[in-house]
Structure formats: structure tokens, C-alpha cells
Amino acid sequence: MLALIQTIIMALDIYWWLIIGSAVFSWLYAFNVVNPRNPFVGSVGNFLFRVTEPALRPIRRILPDLGGIDISPIILLLILFFVRQFILTTVAPALL
Image (tube, rainbow, N blue to C red):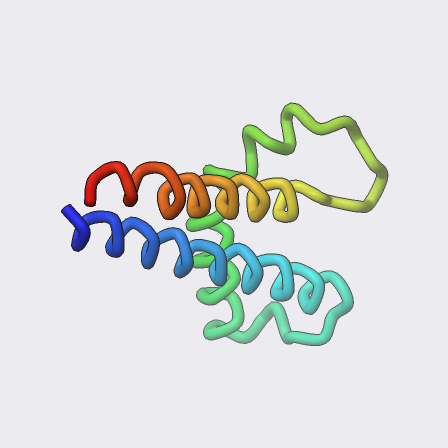
């Protein structure tokens, strides 16, 4: 059972970094730092969008419009942090 918990924690950590990467990539894309016509840049951006958008879309629907500021990645990172800490402090000790 410990191996399953460690695998879930590892998956949450990987998703954490994908969300951060997606946010940084969107800033680089918005400020025209990366070339959007480059096939590699386009495929990386498409991958990050497809991986993170299903989790970010429901949060964006709930949040009010803040103009050009998107805080949905921050909200999602807080949710992931809560789930990770809940697993480590409540679920894992109960199974040991």
C-alpha cells in the first residue's frame, strides 16, 4: 500500500511541475519570447495545454473575471498541495 501512496505523491509532484511549466510557457508565448511558428515550440505548448487545461477549465469557470490576470494555476497548485499533504498526514499514517 505504501508503494501506491508513493506513486500517487510522485504523480502529483510531476503534475505540479507541468502546471508551473505551462504557466511559464504561456508568459513566454504572450510576451513573444518564443517563436510560435517553430514546430518544437508549438508541440511543447500544445502538450502543456492539453495536459493542464482539463484541470484548469473548471477553476476558470468558477473564478470571476480579473481582466488579463489568470490565477487558476495558483488555485490548482494550492489544491494539489492540500491533496498531497492530506495523503501524507492522514491517509498514509492510517495505513501503516
